[in-house]
Length: 223
Image 1 (cartoon, rainbow, N blue to C red):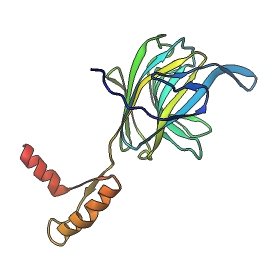
Image 2 (image 1 turned 180 degrees about the vertical axis):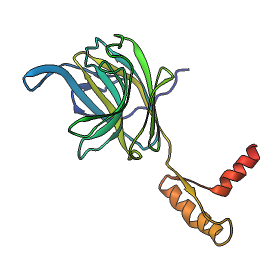
Image 3 (image 1 turned 90 degrees about the vertical axis):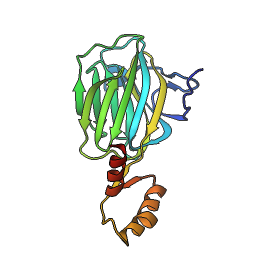
C-alpha cells in the first residue's frame, strides 16, 4: 500500500515554481546581481504553521552550479522577509543559517564545497525543539545549532538557488506542541488551580503542560 503524504497549499514569493504535483519543481534560471549574472532565487511558503517538531523532504539538483542551494525554511517573517533555514548547498554542503534582510548569519556550517551530486535525491530532515536545531541528511546528523532565542511560530517552506531545476519531493511537516513545566505545591488549593485553570488554558493554546508530580509519577510507573 502506498504511503499517504499530506498535501499542502503553496504560494511562490520569489522565483518560478510548479506546485501541481509532487515533486515541487523550482525552475531555476539566471538573474542579474548588479551588472553580473547569477543563479535565480526562489522562495515558496506553504499553509502549515510550525513552532517545533520536524520538517523533511527529498531534494534533487538537476545540474548544480557552484552556488546551488536548497533549504527548508523553518521560520519566516512576512513583514521583514527574514527567515531561518537549514539544508544543502555547494558553497558549503550542510548549513543552518538565517537571513536578516541584509546579510546571512551562519549558525552551523559543515562539509566541503562542490559536493552535490546531480540527479541524486537527498533526504533532509530538520528537528526543532525550543532553540535547538538539528539537520539530518539521509538519516545522519550533519549539523546542529543553538539559536540565540527560541524560534517563533510561523508558516514554513523552501528556499532555492540555482540556474537549473531543483525538485522537492515528499515535503512533510510534523509539529510538536510547545511544553510548559509547572512548578507549584502539590496540595489544595494549588491542585485545583492547576487542574481547573492552568491546564485548560494551556490546552486551549496548544501547550503541553506538565507538573513535577506528573513526571515523577510517570517515572515511578515506568521504572
